[in-house]
Image (tube, rainbow, N blue to C red; front, side, top):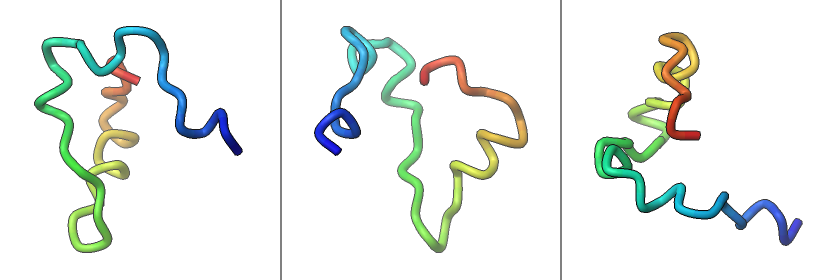
Length: 42
């Protein structure tokens, strides 16, 4: 469980990190990222 909150070193310092949208119930961007195959930042 503790590891779920850990990110790889530097992942949040990526210049494109500010372009990542927040996934919500009313705006499921995670599904769109999955379908488009754009998992480069993750």
